[in-house]
Amino acid sequence: MSASVPWARCVQRSGQTLARCSLKRTSVVAATCRAPSRARPSTLRSLTYLPMRRAQNARLFSTTARRLMPDEEDAFDPASIERESDEVDVCIVGGGPAGLSAAIRLKQLANEAGNEDFRVLVLEKAGDLGAHILSGAVIQPSSINELIPDWLDESNPDRFEHATPAGTDRMRFLTKTSSIPIPAPPQMSNHGNYIVSLNQFVKWLGERAEEVGVEVYPGFAAAEVLYNADGSVKGVATNDLGMGRDGKPKDTFERGMEFHARVTMFGEGCHGSLTKQVISKFDLRKDSQHQTYGLGLKEVWEVDPAKFEKGLIVHSMGYPLPKEVYGGSFMYHFGDNLVSLGLVVSLDYENPWLSPYQEFQKLKHHPLFKDVLEGGKCISYGARALVEGGFQSIPKVAFPGGALIGDSAGFINVPKVKGTHNAMKSGMLAAEAAWNALSSTDEGTVFLYEYEESLRKSPIWKELKEVRNMRPSFHSPLGMYGGIVYSGLEAYVLKGRTPWTLKHKTPDYASTKPADKFPKIEYEKPDGKISFDILTSVSRTGTNHEEDQPVHLQVKDWDEHTDKTYPPFKGLENRFCPAGVYEYVEDESKPHGVRFQINSQNCIHCKTCDIKAPHQDINWQVPQGGEGPKYYMT
Ligand SMILES: Cc1cc2nc3c(=O)[nH]c(=O)nc-3n(C[C@H](O)[C@H](O)[C@H](O)COP(=O)(O)OP(=O)(O)OC[C@H]3O[C@@H](n4cnc5c(N)ncnc54)[C@H](O)[C@@H]3O)c2cc1C
Ligand code: SF4
Image (spheres, protein in one colour):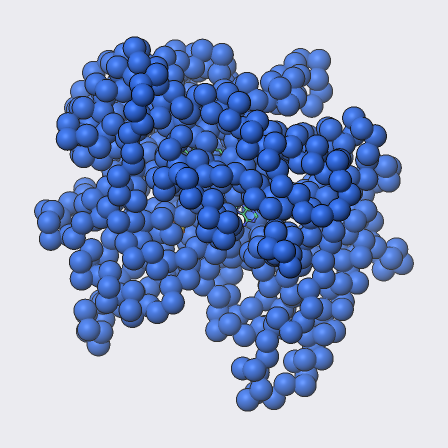
């Protein structure tokens, strides 16, 4: 950090060093980057003015702070400080498989056309790329084969080195003590697929993106959608940093930053906080059904080598979930003695006593899993909601000035338990449409008609249409058994050629029934070897949030929330949250004898509360960039 070099100052944001060196694969201060200037990521080049911006902000704020008397502090409006802005060609929110594939494809096209100045920027809320990604993950390589054909080639020094070829597939129906083999439908055949840690894969994809010139900003949480005067999307803004829990700026206050682009893509994954707003603003669900969701909980274990079967893929239905609850488990053996084990629970469950976290702990005691885990070590835990609505729930994906890509739109093939290949492909299709649109005109609002069209002609559309009736068939009067039989018929005989399309029923938040309609579920205490209490699990996510900041789980009136939610549902938030964030603490001074509490530091960004809260009064917003879970090997 030398003051003599104008741009060689530490560019810090919330403890994150902004400038990252793609050669060193590490965060660096600009002056310490020894890469030739041509090879430096443009992040370094374009951010040289940032120290100045921070100095300006600091000056502005300290001036304001000096001037303010205590009784005036309340009147201070952070919005009165103008935000710095940056102008790029395409801004992508979310550095997941969809966002990074879109970014890489755009820069490939720009570089092929000799337009190296074409700026593509990716904003990612995690401190490091991949750190908020949670997935199975068995990936179908169709999209990565297309995007980076030599991704596994021995001759490629930058190949991805952590892919385990899929081996034996097993499908089981579980009762409490036994596991019954059932035929795996063709969709679930994994021949030719790879087991990976999606979090490692995304990190690697990010490096490939920087190599082709994408500007990747981890630690930047997009918090606000910006609009042009004509109503089209103008870009996004990151949130203000250094605000106290009381909503007042602290001396570390720093105004957010605006990123303006002619095309803004939302690749926030399932139930994105900005995607939600854009869908509503442009009424993108006008011709589609509501989205439906599941919550996936997952652990990675290092197991006894004698129990490890490299490439083994096991899926199950049945125990521990009651027959009215759709869901299932997965167990993938990959890498060196690693086992990825998880349970997906659909969020349209009715019984508020049900706890997806506790069901997952119960699952691990089933002999099918316990035998593998015993003697092993749990090395990570995480949870994330996933989209289950499929074909019926695909919204319009293009709107003036932008597009939805990946799980933000919702392209998971539920019977196949896969979404990564579709997320990537949708990003690539949107990229091609954006490149063509931006190349054909230098100004004015861009609308990606071509993306809507190419999506309909793509394998994504065909694949999701074919399986569209499987998930909703589990709502027939025959419940789970009816769904299994109907899905078998679709998989082997009908193959989606039926003239009908089954509808999704009630949205997840409205599916929960009052607690007094069900007997309370008593879960067994964890044994500390196979099953764990929730705080031990949360400690394995590495999650952290600065305590003195506005709560990012926004509930307007905590007492009103308690009045409406506690009496009928008896604290369901405590049970649906896989990180122990919500509590009702005994408090005799309160009307219901309890006080609502939000331990927001524990949040692992799974979005379940925003989806399942019965009165839709919990609004998940991004906290400060760089906060949240620090997943690795997930
Ligand atoms: C438990 C589980 C198991 C799964 N198993 C499989 C499997 O075996 N195979 C498979 O193919 N798929 C699987 N999936 C689905 C797969 O993970 C998703 O389809 C895929 O990750 C979607 O990619 P995406 O880029 O759309 O979203 P994501 O992977 O969710 O990435 C979104 C990124 O955007 C960032 N972000 C969000 N909001 C903001 C914001 N406002 N500002 C900045 N950054 C933001 C997030 O931090 C994240 O990094 C599974 C999913 C789960 C939950
Ligand atoms: S608070 Fe909400 S988003 Fe955070 S972990 Fe709990 S349910 Fe998930």
